[in-house]
Length: 223
Image (cartoon, rainbow, N blue to C red; front, top):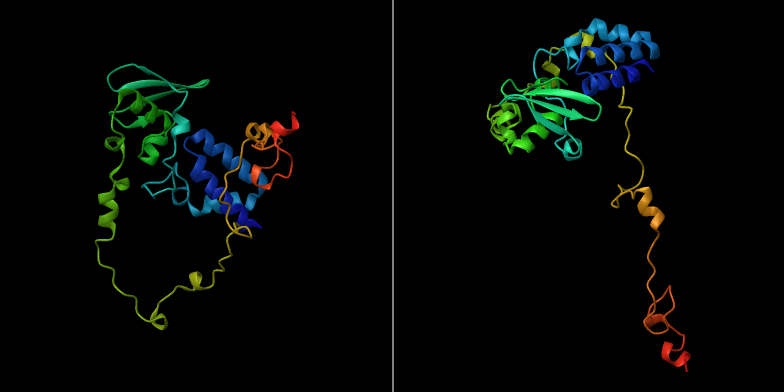
């Protein structure tokens, strides 16, 4: 359905489109899937749903678990504030004074990207000084410091007809049946090793222990 494609397209633009090149590729991909979705996004205004064109920080969902992203990055200093980070075949320029990176994640998310983290880790610098005030505990606490006025009765609400007539479809993501998994998914190498089998302390055979063993003792069998 078009609304599902539209929802997925918006999430892709928020998660991936940090540069104009990435944005153009995603727009072309969206048009190939459903031209109606591409037209809808253009009509709505890019600043309303795209990270790249947003005028303000909208609190995009991010993760702080970037330890694996930092590993393997080579940091070279150009000046006191400017650094070059080699990330595989690509090279990125970080300016700690301006809080920017050539990948554009640093300045758009207002929190150090993996390349900036590599520099901070290399220089033993505290990361909180390079994060926006939006992500600090004091800001979160102050968010709830403003009193919230109660709403009047629902019968007194003045809802525009364009809103009341809009049909909101359920999310395409559903919780899988059954209880959530508690055990981790083992990698292939760990599965190939196989499960270790304990030997019986009485007879020396594998697959059981001395409590359930009916075999003669090992020293008795050798006589």
